[in-house]
Each structure stands twice: as structure tokens, then as C-alpha cells.
Image (tube, rainbow, N blue to C red; front, top):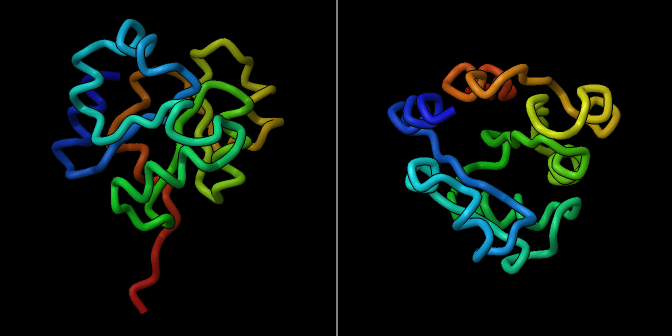
Length: 132
């Protein structure tokens, strides 16, 4: 996943995290090498927690990313619910605690089989934007 985040950064892609974790606990859970590659981190203290879409909206506003150019990768049904409520592409990370069927049932548009799936290839999941 680290190499994928580095590749996304090299492509000029903004990245962030929206988590249910408290900021103090997140320091123990998020490796520093990953944290340094994130442009924004939204925690449960910043907005209403998932499944509300508020965290995704806050991240997008801080990143200054057009909504149609954003997607959300998550490993739980509440992540998929939040992404769908925010009208974003929902990508289910099946290496988490929840089975693929639960991610699909919660609205995952696509399933990512492994952490190595994180990288520039994710960008092909974004809808094509007409130049007209």
C-alpha cells in the first residue's frame, strides 16, 4: 500500500483518510510513513462519524477536489454506506475484517483484493468526465 500511495502522490493525486478512530489512538495505528503521504485526515472528532457522509465531504473540501473526481476506499460496510451517501465511487478493501459479500451488500462498486491494489490503477474507477 505504501508504494501505491507514493505512486499516487507522484501522479499528483490528493489522498486522505476518514476514520472512526480518535486522533490520539490514530497515532498508534497509522504508520508514520503512511501518515506523511496523506494530505488530510478526518477523525470522529472532526465530523459526525461514518456512516454519515460528513467526513468524506470535509475531506473533499479540504483537498479542494471536485466531487466527481473522488472515490473512497474502505474496509467496512459503514465505509461503503458513507461513500454511497456522499455519492462517491465506493471501493471495498477485502483485506479488512469484513467479507466481500458484506461490502457488496453495503454498496461497494468494486472490490479491491489486496493492499497492492492501492495505486494509480484506482483512477480507472472514476467516471469519465465529458470535455463538452
